[in-house]
Length: 162
Image (tube, rainbow, N blue to C red):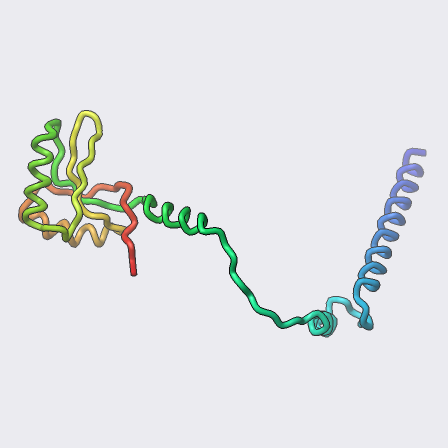
């Protein structure tokens, strides 16, 4: 008896879902006023429907100025994970500032120095390198004046590219 009842429910379900499909196909035929091809998935059907609805026009962009301000703010504050060269690490801020000024005298603005405080140490890290190879090239040049320098992974400021 349970088997008969289950089969009856299955037949009713399949019949109702088939009727739902028929009504969707009828709605699709009504929505398209042209002649329906035998296969609604064919490319002829799609091309014909687009040709009837094609209208030429102009596009004008009307956007809020605040979007540009937010985008510029995002670009200005964007940081990514990259590499820097650490020249100094110690617990004296005065020594760290001295190393930073010495570096600025020797290398001017070629490589930007950064004073980082990670309790209890002050660190001088230079450069904003996206990859390790770029940092390695500069490390070889800096090893002449700073023999204890080494590469560290750090959050870097995104260099602005023109």
